[in-house]
Image (cartoon, rainbow, N blue to C red; front, top):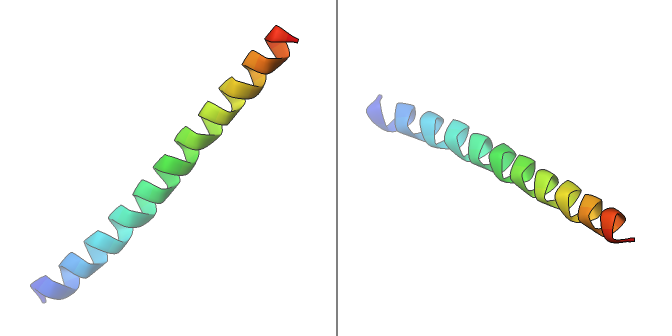
Length: 40
């Protein structure tokens, strides 16, 4: 039971981490594009 719960928590945590990393990458990308726009 505990192992099953840990697997579920780990899966949810990895999904959360992936979405967090994706969001951070998107904001960095937006920032980079805005900076280039500003320079141009």
